[in-house]
Amino acid sequence: MLYTEGNLTAEDAAMRRIARSKVRAALCSFETKTQTLLDSLVGKLSQPVSSNLTVDRILNLVEQHPQLLSEAAVIRRYTDAYPELTDTVSAARQNIQTRARRRLESALAPFEFQHRFRFTKGLRC
Image (cartoon, rainbow, N blue to C red; front, side, top):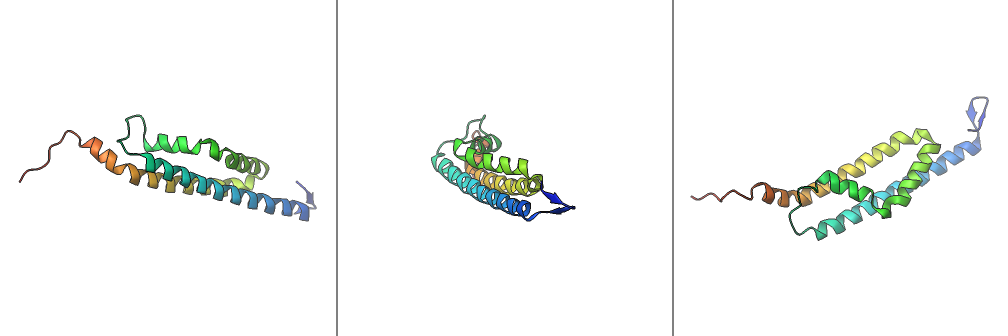
């Protein structure tokens, strides 16, 4: 870091602004691509989810998709260089994951309901 008598130099402050903007752009791209992947995945779901595919497992597979690797690398590189971005990035990633989890849970709820009550008979009045 470039310090002069305890103060950041203008060059270091400019580099931090660039890092914040790059991370912000990578997070936006990460969220957009995650939503696109989820939309295509939800559109393809036409059968009940098998027992080994839970919401957590599907979300983990989506987050490790090759289309998201470049954004994850940019985020990791800048958070390693500027540790003060770590809290912001973790909060943003948590928000992305929460929205994705809600989307998956609402899409898979009918299948889970059908699977859970598959052996019950309807009520007769």
